[in-house]
Length: 257
Image (cartoon, rainbow, N blue to C red; front, side, top):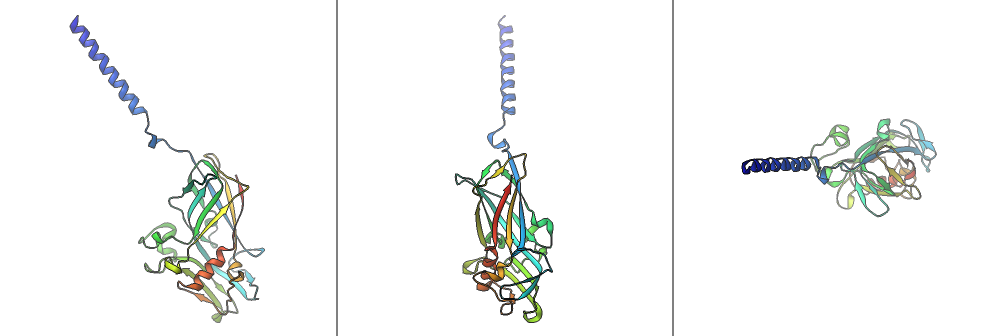
């Protein structure tokens, strides 16, 4: 009888241990539980004053100078979303090369966002200092995109090139760079959505529209005369003026949730 009891006790113990182990294996750790996430598209609508912006179209500055853009590129990076309570979500890898000659680049997708309601957005025009000194990279930051100078001078944050009969040689070329010190050209922009809210849900794909007015490059308070300043190809105060004028023309429009 004692022998049978001990055998029964041993079997019961094994069953209990197996059950506990199964429960442990089937219970996921908190860090393994996927947080519901969603995405949105950033629609970038470019214009020149009241006209749609397109390569090789003719436009005029307030000073009467004629121009046509043949190249219009810039980096939009480091996207962050902010909630009403001040909490911030940062995209871990948001580096987009916006190219007017590549329509697909004008609608970048921001993915992997935790579900929630967001009240403002922050992003950078340009490339942050860390990536400027991180060696050879891929994707939007690949050297093959022709948006890079050298490892000491870094990325070209924005490139605006074209023709103008008022420019010596009939061309203008603004390559804006500089990533450190007083000559750093990166610009961090913040836009509040109020009274709108960006609602991120797993099953939706909202559209956040921004407008970019290229005439501000020439017609801002620090206006640029093409005849006197046809070329900017190095970090400096003129490069900062070009990029500051440019970002002054970026505005939040609306959200389609």
